[in-house]
Each structure stands twice: as structure tokens, then as C-alpha cells.
Image (cartoon, rainbow, N blue to C red; front, side, top):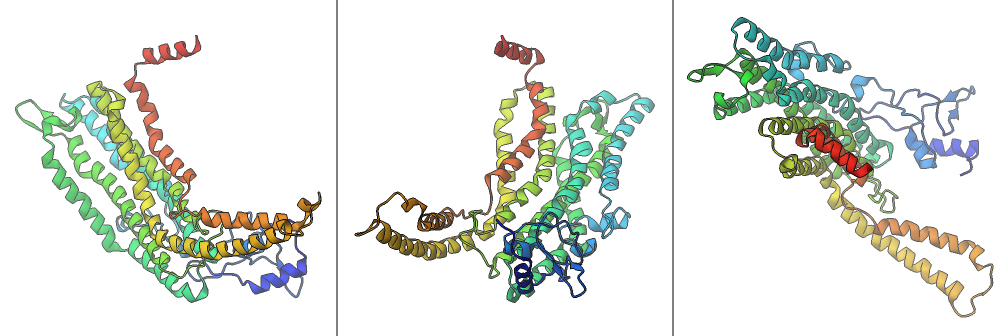
Length: 457
């Protein structure tokens, strides 16, 4: 597409003022690496305070984001429970989440003491065996891998969820009359996410779960490094007590914090779906322009990876202890994957009713237009007295009608849930990836080598 004249672009930019950010702040000066024209002031200096919403309306593109508000003012889904505990420990504060330090501290608190206490008990009391702890794959996947992943997920997922929320403004879906309600949804979401009451509620719920689980697991059925004493009198070892009241509750705190964040994400989308959004039934994404909301599944793939790591560790332990078949766990794994996909996709259902109404409106409006244009086209080119020569296909009516029908086909192909197959595939792949190292445990290495030989020779 040819670049528009500078003067024409200048006039169109004046008609589309720069939109504010999630917090009502206008974007500050942005980097100049843009593929759209920038307006110049009276002194000839380039004014780069152009948001990519302007470029979107001009049919151009933006090469990098234009959000220049301070980080603390742009955060929406960062933080969350157990935010109060982390702030009290000095592990994070607004604008400085310290993801790496917190991930390392989770390992030092949740996993390292288990190893140290098991070794100390083995040396001091000649009981227990560190090899039993080292062979417990489940505890390693939970405390050494999954728990830090849940911290890292905040650095990956939260900014992308923020970008999705901002896109409702950048793409012009929320008009100025609806802006106060959108701002109220943002403010209430941030308030609930950072609520100290929610943080302490998550801590109380985690220990309530622990209090209910401990009596249901007899000591003699726990791994060897969990217990101490002879067959007649068994009790929790120091490592067992630490796991029961520190390591496992820490993992639960992080999981419950993500569940709370997902609940608020669902609530935010529900509040947005009640606005009078400016949707486009003929949008090429086949979701009236809302397919970007479905990209939240890609953002949440790190969380799915952590959940898959926990399940893969439990499956590996079962295979090592009972020498069973991996395919015996296939139904459990498939059920877990289906549950995670349904859980992460459920918030998108709030737009289904809106998309159905837009589809109905588009079918009537665009369908009537297509029928009218089609009737005129057939009458002109195929009716009585229509010209018949080899130059007909070069007439602009043919390409214009084809373009119109392509637009109308987008309306009829609308999906009622704004999610795409690629996002679902990435989510499932992240969930199943931790099970790849588990497969050799179910099939002896000799059998794997023989199977490879049979394929090659």
C-alpha cells in the first residue's frame, strides 16, 4: 500500500487524538522507530506522542509499544496474594517485583531445608536415608521446579494480561462514553488484587487445607524421608514437619494466588463484556476483533507448564515405585489437560453472548448488502444485453464484488468464543512438555533402543 501524503496523514492524526492508558494518563514521548508518520509542531520538531491506535486506523503498523507511563501506574495483574506476606518480608514492592530473588528464595525455603534436614538426621541419629529423598521425584518437581515457575509466571503472564486489557483502549473498542465504566473496572480489579485481606485469606486457606490433609495420610504411608522411628512408633521427621508446614503450604500459597488472579481476570472480562463495545463483525480474525483476548491462553502457558511439572513428578514417582505403565496414567493426564484448558478458556465465554448478537447483526446487515450488490452485478454482467467480450474479467466490478464477498464471508465465519487453535495448542503443549522425561521411565532403555533399531534396519 502506498504511503499517504504527509499533509493527509497530518489531518487524519488531528482527527484521532492520542488515547490515555489504563490509568487515564496520556502516553508520553515514544521512541521514533515507527512505521507511521509523526506530526511536526510549529517549530519543526517531530512530535512522537502517537499511539499505535492511530496507526491502526490509518492502516499502518507500529514496531514497538508506546506505553511510557511509570511501571507502578501501568500494573494491573502484577502482585496479588500473597502480596502482603512478600511485602512484609521485603521481597517485593510496587515497581520492583524482584522475580529472580523471590524464585531463588522459594527454593531456599521450600527445598533446601528438606535436603539439609534429611542429611543432618541421617548423620546425627543414624536414621533415614538421603537417597530416599533424592529419589523422590515428586518433591523435587514441586519445590525445586514448579514453585519457582509460579513466581516466574508473574513476570511472563501479568504483563501480557495487562497488554490485553490495554488493547481494549488502543484498538478503540471502548468509546469515550464507556470510559468511566472501564476505568472503574480497572480500579476495582487492582484494588481486589492488592487487597491485604485477600492475601491473608489465601494464607489461612492454605493452612486449612494442610490441617485437613495431614490426618488423612497415615505416617507409615508417607515416603521414608518423611518419618522417623521404628515400625511400632512412627512420627514425622524434621524434614517431614518442614515439608508439611512450610514447603507444601508455600506451594499452595502460590497456586491459590494464581487462582485468585484468574478469578479477577474473569471478573474484569465480564465487566468489559457489559460495556457497549465497538465490535466489527467483518473483522478478519473471525471474532469481531476480540481474538486478542484469546491470546491470554498463550500468556498462561507458563502456569500450565508449572501444573504439568507437578503432575509429571507424581507420575514419575508412581512409575518408579510400582513399575506400572505410563499409559495407565493417560486418562488422568488427559483429564488434567482438559481441565486446565477449560479453566483458562472459561473467562472468554463472557463474550459469547455479545459475539452471537454481533454475528446476527452482521449476517443481516452484510448479507443484505451482499445480496443487493450481487443482484446489481448479475444484472449488469449476466442479464439481457450484458456485454460479452474477453475484457470483462478486467473490469473493476469483478474485483470489487470479490472483495465484498470476502468481507461478508468473515461475518458468516465468526466464532462465538474468542480463542484460536494456536493458543489452545500452545497451552496443551506446555502442559504435556514435562511428561516427556517421564516416558523413558515407563519403557526400559533396551526396549527403546530395540524399537529404534527396528525402524532403521
